Amino acid sequence: MSTTSTYDAFLEACGQQDCPVCRLEHTADLHYLDRLFYELVNDLGVRQQLRASLGFCSEHTRMAMDEVQGKALGLAIIYDDLLRVMLEQMAAPRVDLNSSRKCPACDNRDETTGWVLTELSKNILQEPLLGALRASQGLCFGHLRQAFEYLRTPEKRKTLLGVQREIMERLRGELAEYIRKNDYRFTGETFGPERDSWRRAGKMGRK
Image (cartoon, rainbow, N blue to C red):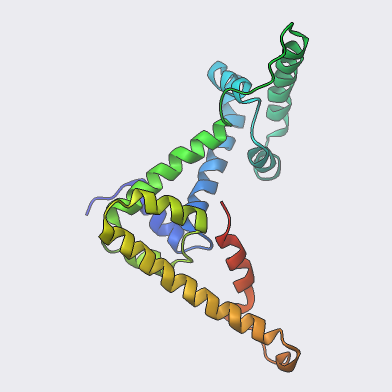
């Protein structure tokens, strides 16, 4: 079977921590921001997008600051331009501080999500994707809802919900064991795979 790069990336993400769609979104975010700060800070089209959105959203600003190398000068150039634009708007006879579009990094993320969920919809009834999904930590609640909309047939939806139910029930079992071992009566017992179940459960609600 011929595969796409998105399909292959999804299979790889299923073998790692967290919701595989969240992981692929995060990777796409970092690639986008890294390329922007390395190559596109002075690109007119990018600059116009950032002016229209009044910069990056808070999440992608934090990501740029914390996770992207060599971003300081790029951020300084971008936000110097945005501050100039905002000052001009504030001095206009009729002040309009509304942005006309989303953060461009969010647009890039949404495009990535669409590709990933399309591949999931196309291949969920087939191996090896089905097996990889079953062995993963499952989709977070937000991506489960989105995926459900992409899967148009009852069989595909039933398959997705069945896999997700297995994963969530397994996680609940680990949470129960984690909670039990935190009871003072069982504090002598060592933690096993359930030791980070609370963290994995918390990430299920992301998005």
